[in-house]
Image 1 (cartoon, helix red, strand yellow):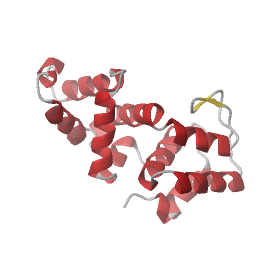
Image 2 (tube, one colour):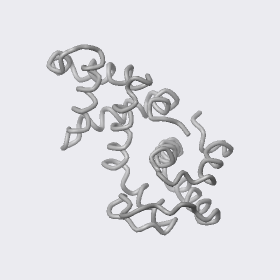
Image 3 (cartoon, rainbow, N blue to C red):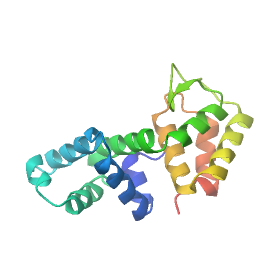
Length: 167
């Protein structure tokens, strides 16, 4: 199971930049600002100092930071926020394929303790067929890390299936 800061370290630079830039450009900038404040506080800077820098400089500082364990919370907020805001179709496709009730990609209620292997495998295949592989990898790792049920079959897929590994 990869934590969010490790995902930022393993994902391509292009995807990492895309996540931060998408959140900076989002209508609701709360997630981006939260990450920015977290980075500023941990680096003993004032958030206003960072806000006065160019967006490219701010984004690079955020990216340099969220790859470190100290910034796990900020990394997790960015990944979850980006997935929920920019990857709803992927979330819906997965949750529909494993027959979980959800509202716009957010599960309503508790997750089951286990998931049927056939359903899970079919859901993963559907994601890989329809969406960018690296985004699927980020989503599945994030889902597993944040899934209170910790499905063993998902963990095994993430560990053994080369398609679900970061390049």
